[in-house]
Image (cartoon, rainbow, N blue to C red; front, side, top):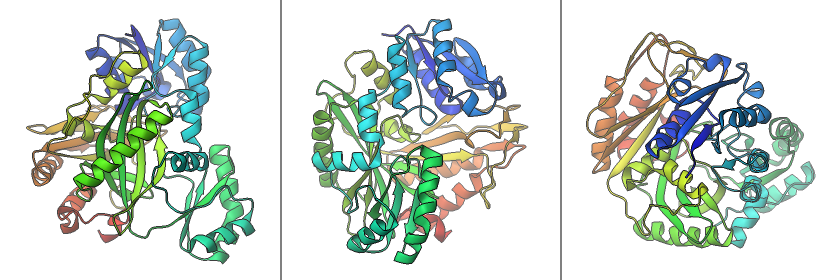
Amino acid sequence: MFKRVLVANRGEIAMRVIRACHELGIETVAVHSEADEDALHARFATEAVCIGPADPTRSYLQIPSLIAAAEITGADAVHPGYGFLSENAEFADVCSQCGLTFIGPSPANMDQWGDKVRARGLAKSLGLPLMEGSEVLRDAEHAVSEAQRIGFPVMLKASGGGGGRGMKIIREAETLARVFPQAQAEAVAGFNNGDLYLERFVERPRHIEFQVLADGRGGVRVLGERECSIQRRHQKVVEEAPSVAVSEELRNDMAQTIIRAMRESDYASAGTIELLMDERGQLSFMEMNTRIQVEHPVTEEIFGVDLVAEQIRIAAGEPMETPANLKHHGHAIECRINAEDPETYAPWPGLITELHMPGGLGIRIDGGIYQGFRVPAEYDSLLAKVIAYGDTRDIAIARMKRALDEMVVGGIRTNIPLHRRILDHPDFSAGRLSTRFLERL
């Protein structure tokens, strides 16, 4: 097992990794920007190192600075969390070259799943259900031809995109011809990869994802699915597990398909297979995320598994503690609490003057804030995640409502009122969800 892990991230996920490491008896190194000098992850790690100014391109995204911090503090492994460099194959490769274990999949795993067009081809070869789409588009004329073959509407996607970025809904040929050059330029600027492709667009899909743990030696665990359909601009807002739309038969069939795919692709670490469910209840592969997900706690709650600890064990070459064919119990819901205006969604950084976190039976908080903490303007607006667990979905909903009523964050605006409106909506109670749910509020 590792002796000291450098956590190459910030905020709540850095705290989550630090906690898992300390429970395993591993010392931790926190890296922080000048803006995060007083952040919780810098306070609770065994050691903390400043790696640059607030601008993430000059701190959290600076590979040389991260490697230097690991070397001077004697770290023997690096955990990237999610976001930032978590799916950067170059970072994983540099870690290996410098004698550091990257706690995540291999650079080869990241390369084969990270490019969306390549991942579609791989998914098809591995037997995963695939949404009708195209290969890389040569130009606007080729895009229009492929869209007419697939049938409008279509989704124009950047091959190097992710996290909901680099996607445009196209409903007619004229629009596609017009926006194609702009989308290509945006893809180059945002992902250093101008490749674009098309997928059939489903008007009101559900977003369903399956959690994977694999050790690269044939051991694979599929820990059920998460429902992540409540989104704003392709960014998840509320997640839950399991999904009311997934039958036990479909769950088992997808698990067996995914297990075979992970074994054949020699995948190792945690990962998530993301799929769309259309109006007929059919699942189609979208992408694979080769990292821990923001919403991983809902899976942990219903399976009783520490996914981050399992990531660490796999990277250290130790056997997973999660038994095969483990069954879930109960229901869990997660609300992402963001520093933003609940009506306009505008970011709202600033000083937290008052803070009361909810508690009680069935409530878990994963956060990185405290009273007196100044929320920086330079980073994602996520403050904390409230997770509610119950034996049934109705109990989990009731506990989440109670928790949101108890939660107080003073001095800044948050999206807590938005979450209350979501949970109070009759369609949410009935499980009638889609990625366009927020249009009904």
